[in-house]
Image (cartoon, rainbow over all chains, first blue to last red; front, side):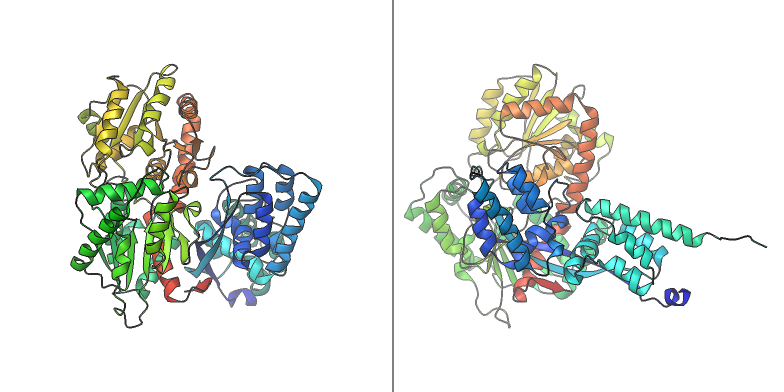
Length: 228
Length: 410
């Protein structure tokens, strides 16, 4: 194990920024939202679901569709259902799109159509152009990782913890992958897998990771047994 | 210069700026607008050009010249785009075009990328130099800073003839984007934390300004900083102040600078003075252009800052006040809801009564003032500093040059 750690491939922190690009498509009613979810680009669906956390706002929803339905149409029940959709569970965007449509279609079948959004509160469909670049921070071991995670930008945590789930699939993030595959620290990786990405802001995720790694580093530093 | 932002702006933004600076080293980037002084656009350009140059980019800033008739027409176009009924005759449009044509002859339009700000110089696209760049791909971008969510349609349609000839348009807020045949990016404007308007001030500097304008520091201060423009609703702010005054003794300051492209400013200023009717606790300050330090001092001495706009391009005074840790009450219009997360970094209001209620909440709850002020400052750091805006412009330039894939790795 020590041999693995000493020659481990360092963790290269990356981060990303996104520039919003308008599709110029907007929905005023639930039916319009539904029809546009069915037809907008995959990039737009990705932006309004997977990139929700990059905005860094603390809200009670987990994607833009749920937020709009809850706040602008005041349809709490449907907002709850849309919020429970985990975009990282799906293999691809078409499957995620189908899941969103199923929630809206079921609702439209069972309930009267909600009022339309007030002027200026329509849902605006956007896409993004994403630029990924090195954060110029490298961690060779857990102690260095702990210092880095404390200071890196929130956009770096988003890239490695949230965006990685789309790249890697299976609920895996870059941090736990490095712990498991490079450092051979499967137990530590499992603790990261247990963090619910939907229940925390980026800063909340940072605190959780710091706490878990801090405990591990402290334990590794302790001298056990009786000194002679 | 860019090094001065270390420890203030997010580190990632600075890293990406350096990378983009390397990519566009010695390339020319031309900005054109209609005024060098007054208003948010000129202010951002004054700060942005030196940053771009420091990154190694040959940035230039030109302004178009026009007579009173031209600026009367462009003010009407501006108002119509923001939803006020105005008739722009064919003759007026022709004059708008002719003035731009004259400017095009005088200006050096040769550049590797061109960014035209707002409707006044929009017709310059007709004079684009087609074969300037060896690659033949010089992006011309039209940057719209104003609220176009509910325009007078005929005026918007006419302007579109010019806009759709650009390679892309840039709006401040998603809801301003229109269905056009070109790409439309959303880039909010920003403030410069190192400018005279936003830098840290000493207590003495703040006191100096208050003494200069004879403002007593013995009571809470309500402040709105904006041009004297009906869309900024200065009368509505006085109404709110009068409601607050029934419960809490306070002072109101309405402070603004004249803009050379806004002939209506004086009319509105006189309306506001009449409405204030010599109330000794209402201070109406017509600040000279470049009163940045005084505005900074006024914002720092305020207890509560308002931006009760009825229409707004973006409302950067909101970010300025939030950067100074002040709680802000803003009209729920234009870009203000992007800056104020209601109930978290400030309050959004729709009426004078709503504004008065929120002011009273702040005046009676110092803990809320402190907490919202702190959150607001962090929110501005991560989203509305000038380094982010320069980063976004260069990113759009890069994306257009590279055929707009959706993901790039640098």
